[in-house]
Amino acid sequence: MPSTFTVFFEDPYWVGVLEIAGPDGVRAARHVFGAEPTGPELLAFALRGADALIARALAAPAVDAAAVARPYRPNPKRLARAAAREQAARPVSTAAQEALARSFAQAKTENRAAAKRRRAAEDERRRARAREKAKARHRGR
Image 1 (spheres, one colour):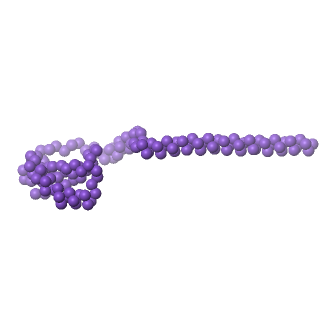
Image 2: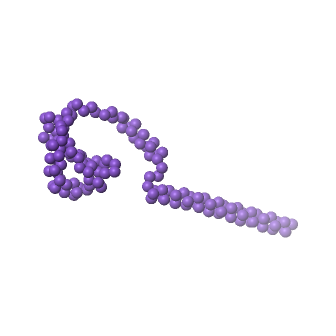
Image 3: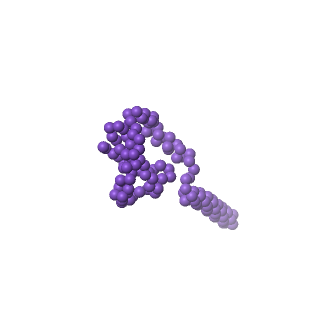
């Protein structure tokens, strides 16, 4: 009997699903890992816990795979565009990202203020030089 073991993220846990296809239909059982399993953890699970998972899958009722209607699958490009719009509309997701965004905004504000002060000081130096030149020209007459 062909079987498939799939590991995927089902918020908030990582889940493994064992599907066993037989002449009477498909049987399945699932195992919740919690944190994302690494390769060695999956191997250890296969060695120690796979027997119990197979037994649970074989005890599960069979479902005729042909009778199950496939869900509507939208165009991948449309999904990508929708995900990009959602990501752009979503605020910063983690506290660290928010802290970084705030520090960048604060630095930007400080840099603008410093640049404004530098420009004002430079303008004042130019005006002072112009006044000195004007005084020197006036004295020379």
